[in-house]
Length: 173
Image (cartoon, rainbow, N blue to C red; front, side, top):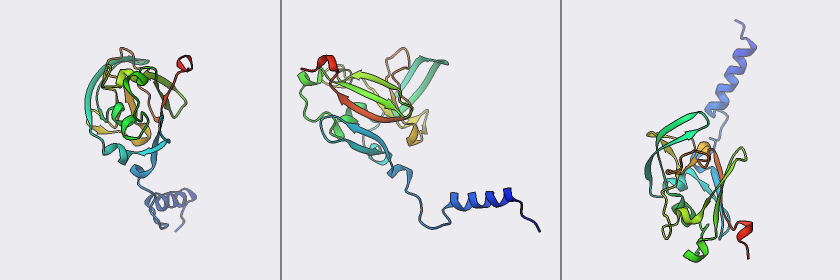
């Protein structure tokens, strides 16, 4: 009986995919997902790290490039992520007023929020780092920021890889 080259390649793919060559690949939840930086040293944050934070559920509607989008998202508040991983340190409200949060997606797309938008001492907007949408888990490579009161979805950065708390150049002393 002949085995075609395609069948052979399929079998090799099956062996690799099932880990039949030995050591299991690391669990996706243990791989770094997002770098969070600011006041302290940068933190490599995993899906497992984020799952330990309290979850918030929000429903949003906004206009995107392809029309209206309506969904329910769940994940930790951006403020809690920043605080937990040391990005805001012990910044007092006066200091928080001139800081910004720079959000970067895997494709290089960036958006910014004023830190005061998410700081409880100011607006306390319920911006989340979404891990679930409409009840379904989001692959950690596709986690996103969701800004609930935006009319347009441009600040909902997809495939989030970095969150940096920065001082905008115009606000530097």
